[in-house]
Length: 218
Figure 1 (cartoon, rainbow, N blue to C red):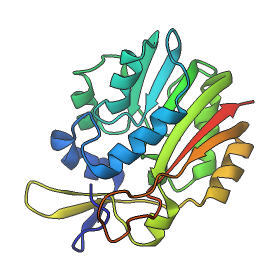
Figure 2 (figure 1 turned 180 degrees about the vertical axis):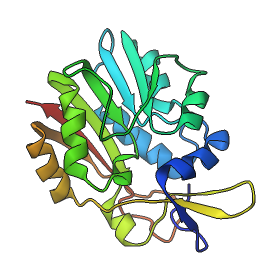
Figure 3 (figure 1 turned 120 degrees about the horizontal axis):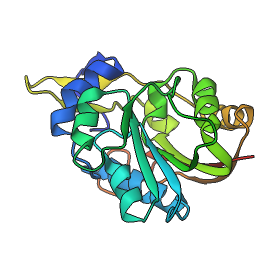
Figure 4 (figure 1 turned 180 degrees about the horizontal axis):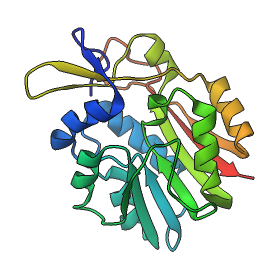
């Protein structure tokens, strides 16, 4: 993933991640992801003994974190089958599904993590209603996305494909006020926010790179 790329070819989410899966490591493998993970883990509540979900789990980065932190149950859901195949090395509690139509029982998770995926969905409000439905009352959602500043500045979530082309994953801009309104409509109360800035030498050093939010089901 890079902040911008040389005229990348933009693909829809399933096609992009099918191509990316083979090289997508289950850890924070670049500076942006390191910033994002630090922010998410700062917001993450205690998960020991609790039912947890890594939504849009990819190759299992946060599944691994949840298991290591003692979650009683750590489930991974992702739209991409190739990504889920990678995640099998971490857990077998996996399901393939769209963020907008989760095959999950209502009020079944205490804590949900959704990292760098909500921007792939155009209808933010609908996504948060569906996610919130699966939380128990008082349950916590921690989710992250590219900071809207970065998206508006032209940053792309990109990778280098096997054929040498730069591929960008289709992404939608959601401003903080959009998150606020969508959470409210989903019965979620935003409790805390992180906006980590780029700390390394870069054209955009000092600017926020990630928006991470902790919200609780009312």
